[in-house]
Image (cartoon, helix red, strand yellow):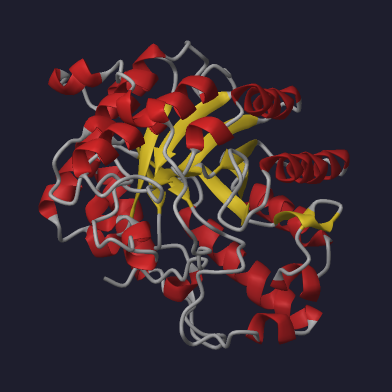
Length: 387
């Protein structure tokens, strides 16, 4: 299937050994399979909003949409606000057909909507040349970027709980924490980030404005260590706050790598990073959680146990921080995981990344996720749930 997103090409390499605990350690929440309460209710009991990514091209799958409706209190707009849909080429008029569908669905289901992404360097349609964005003049870039952002936010003002205003604009290899290999940085300048937040706040003053980024948990697929990336994120946040930029929350994508996760994930350092975000007055959102199961065996039962243990370990650490207000998985079923399409396993096994498998059956991952949400400490809820 065509999701419309061109994701990064992951570095290939030999799979590392799987930590013994991931394969043979007991899963504390294995008995939760009998639980009937949906994930969003388990989360709500402790002030957490659970959501999942979906897109209008999935709406014809009645079985999947029933799962989305039952399990999620919030919908992350996986594709429908990206430019391959809104503006598939430079001169194309804005097309809000898909956006209107997902907004209507969320309202009909009494779900919150989380808009992604207003500013990004990917998600463009085939009508955009590979380097076309970088060749715009400053005037052209301002008109295209801010014009599209303004039209989008105006159309859905008051109907979106939170906007990811800037996605993946941070890099420890950039300048003072900010990516420089970013079209808007190169055409508009460093102020593109500040101006984007100010524009969105002026148009939709009640929405939560989010800066979203990846790569804080373990070494990422490019070999980047998490420490420098955490430092870069804090550096950018500090700069924005000194400029009084209206930044409300920090989004952590949490695309977790299974390969040696249990030995690579430093819980103490991660908790310190979350505390540093909270100390800056920011809410924290886990926005795109899934697991890349490289390094795990082909055997589905063993892989299911290992992925579930990774969910449990990560969330039990992360949800200790009361500033973490939402957990969103990047979909709910392996049927639609972007990892299967963009980076299939070399052994041919279907990727296992989410709470339901490719046959729409609940897995141990669902049990682990449900258990972590239920065990989490109570906190003040960020958004009022309409259901």
